[in-house]
Image (cartoon, rainbow over all chains, first blue to last red):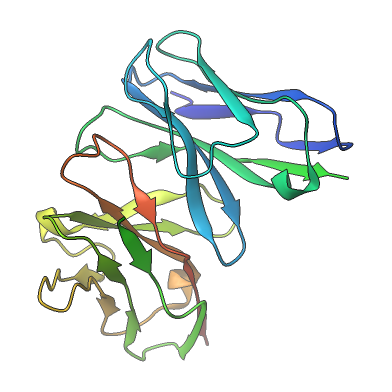
Length: 112
Length: 110
């Protein structure tokens, strides 16, 4: 099993460009999450999906949108990238409730 | 709102020395606390959770509700313990959402 996969691994954007980060899990988990990791700030939740068909805002949702395409896939879209969105983005999944979250390898995004 | 604080961004110890990574939280209810670890070039992964009351890789953590702390301890640090450690809190009513601390980079020197 691949667990949680993310594409791309690296991306450089210019201010104002748009892009979608893809995430998929093969563990049949109900819940999926998008975090950003910034030095000195830890991981901050952007959006999450408690179950297929639902999405909710996390701590830092501004500038992002998400789609829970099906149970396996959860994408994160930047409609108009800004330098403040330069970060490492992690996708994670869990069975739900009190269960452990499993993380993807991350996407390193730079916005110039 | 709930908050998790890890006061040390960097922590350096020598091999064989005891190590304690501090985690404090603010939450009025009954939280569940976790420690996640990210080794170099590896994915973030769960190290331990307070409800399990287990020791993983020699690490233990006790939830102190009076001091609202969940410090991670190991009596004898090893070089392979060098990693970024994150403390995380789950509220009673948050479903599966976690709030992470800022992280502590632990370096164990030979």
